[in-house]
Image 1 (cartoon, rainbow, N blue to C red):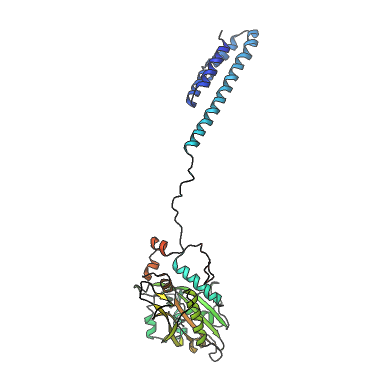
Image 2 (cartoon, rainbow, N blue to C red; image 1 turned 135 degrees about the vertical axis):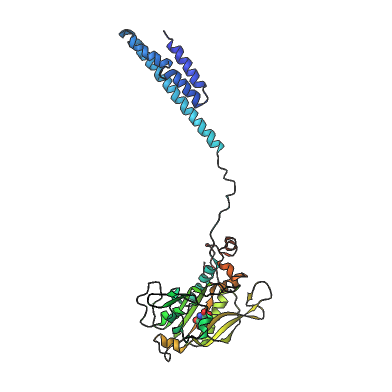
Length: 370
Ligand code: DAH
């Protein structure tokens, strides 16, 4: 007869001695597997007399339960030890610097647009928008460009193919057509919601947006951005225009002193027309506004032509106003010192990382813009 207590002592010793789960499994199979030592003992119970079975049964079953428990306890211990060892080996070193993170940047054009909008909003202007695809009427005719006038050719227009109605649309060459959309009385009721609807005077709007001309060199790109301004009221004169532009230039360039001059020019939609120049220093690599003795052309402007007002259904004897058109990208190159306008649209990530802006900026005291 097998010595049960000796067998239990042997198995317990072996269970306690194993150092890994594979060795523990081997001991389990040896004792409790199909032909294991305890399983064999259990098989003998069937051949015993009822009295012997009553005596041996509980002992052998007790042995099986004790060994089963010992194996489970050892398994638990080995698993915990293995986990502890892994945790120690794989510990994250929180003192290491994080890997470099690539953050998106705000494109300089969008930054400049926001800065411009903030300054004009502060002066009481509201925002208007129009479509990039325009018709000849809004882009030229209503703005007093005579038919077959050379000014039309000077705009290097991108024309679209003729549509079903026989009309040739175009990519707007300037933001000025939105002046027409805003001033045209009783119009625009079928247009999508974001397009400016007509307003009755007094009008005080700015129009930021994309514009297109078939042109490309260091200071011209086929797509660029303009910001148009329009003020219509009674008794508006060029003094209002000069104050508005001077104030804008001083706030935008963050210089308290700006000296500007009107230089006579021609635009079909204004009379008189002017280009405004600003005093600056061009001796260094960057243009410095508010210093030096050079002049730099900065914006086209003028008093809205009576024909334009009449084309929109406004009486020129009752209403006058001024208008202006800035090149947004160019204003960005001047303020932030970019040598070539074309880089603005090259989508070079290294350039954007250098010239782009953080989306999380401290508020700018000059513009109030964050
Ligand atoms: N539309 C002109 C351009 O594209 C800019 C301009 C000049 C706009 C004078 C105006 C203005 O509103 O009054 O060059």
